[in-house]
Image (cartoon, rainbow, N blue to C red):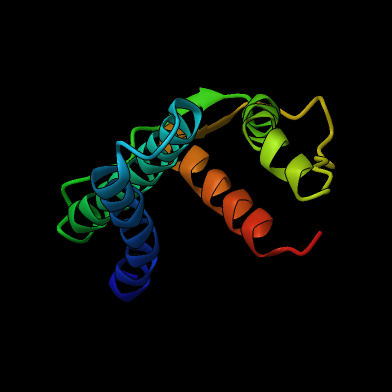
Length: 133
């Protein structure tokens, strides 16, 4: 896991560095739209690096028994729909369709909502990223 996160961290860090370096070296030669686009990409990459750092922190807490699940009752159907909505645009950009084959009347589940959401988010993020159009 640590090796994967370390590897995954290199790409957004390199991209972040590249865009910031370009902004720094060519600030007077870039138009406002191009500058704004570079800043938006750099910001998105910094968010990604932050998420990876948070994942490492949570992994360390899990390994040391400091992160305990906080079960609560919730609708798994609603959670799946919310996560699918979050990935609708990235899926559409790759000409993919997301559909949940979940019966609408499932009983509530008791689990750590945040942890389950993270698992579903990671699965969909990886599936979209690694599935060809």
